[in-house]
Image (cartoon, rainbow, N blue to C red; front, side, top):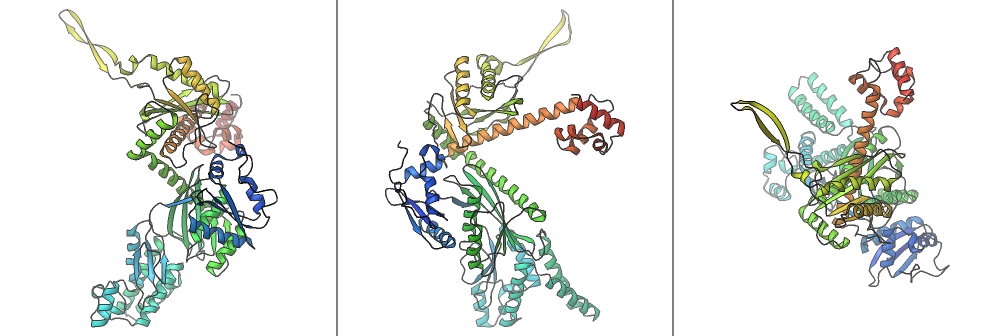
Length: 638
């Protein structure tokens, strides 16, 4: 492959102005749209030597056959044009968004003569005001049922409303007290419109003035001995407090903001969008993103905000993100045009905002794990993954049993390894194994040692099926003692040979694994490695990696194997460290298991405990001055 792209523009041809660029393939299809404050500087990154490019970026520029650009006057114009072109051309190499689901919203149809409140997934009702999204449909209905007790606005269908207004007979929901519109014959259109305005004002900000007013009216009615009116105000007040109680107050009561928590890996990202109005989380929306080319975290935030607010009607005054995009100022101008007022983009760094950001990020991390797990747990997806692996790696059969190995250490010490097993694309946790490696020179030597130890069991297959025998004396017979053999099933160790060994690493680790297979005489087993940085698949003896499609089921399967092996290795290593320090501490006179547990929980880590002074150790409940000094002395000498 040539190291220079044939369509690379001549030197000095690309302007230094801000603008938007498009890569096209031979058929004229737009592959990628991007913006830049300096087109020449930005595009030069794509035309660097191909060997220096990220694999996914290299795939995009080699698929393209031309590049074109449009100069604009300001950075804000480039932002607007980029968004418009992405919406128009839907380029395959731009990030792909997938909402986890079509979320339900509460909508108030302000464009109607007598607005009503409904549950809908349609975001295009003319003149409607939306609240949410809500995670479940029942959550919207529950909120509406509570709200109409305090603000009795219309809930009936348009046909029921028209029929009631024509006949002069209340609609059926109005007859049973479930509809408070003009069709219930209890209020006028103007009075109903005022109630709708109050409903919208409350939902938009949880305005506490309604609580104060209802409390004042209830007390006044009670003082006047108008107990029937006081009871009505009490019920309305209870409904409002119930709505407020369902959404915890997380920020100041006047805070209107949107908060975005993001978790990502090389190929995908998950976004949790918290809608905060009046200091309370009013809705949560989630989406997953497939990244086709390499982009930074700041670039991802940029594109998430464009996606979230490109067609939005409700832009808050503050947007909280994990990191500021490079064009944050231009994004603020772009959002201000949509809101009509100033918009601030900020990083949640401290206090309640930081706490909420951590919560959103944790939810995003869990969503990303669920997304990747779903891809490999579906039967059709698993079958496709195994078939694709067979084709990509040139195997004679689908790898129904895959074993993945990972090495973990602490600065070259406390070296451990893990083996996880997937059969038919699903984990077999009962066959996971962990290894301690007392002496090693580097990761490749560790990998070689572990695989030789594992492969040695393939030469002793009888151990997998041989039951354990327990000999016992059951009693006496006329001829003496009677010997009874009780068979106990032995837990299988390395029950079946794998069709594929996967190692966490690139060429060096794969070559070490291949050497272990040759030395053990088991060259019939295939081996490959997955390099985390670029998600490349390496085969022994090959100078170039196998590149699996970014969205393929086979790559997701290998990623999950790699991640599971890494998790299992880390878990084993932490357990060893806890056991090691517990053994050392148990040697201190007067220090039992319960106090050891309290000590480790108090300091949080072995390093912190070793660095603690006797006075700090003494602060732990149940630890006196003498015992604290003994602990400090004992740890200092070990």
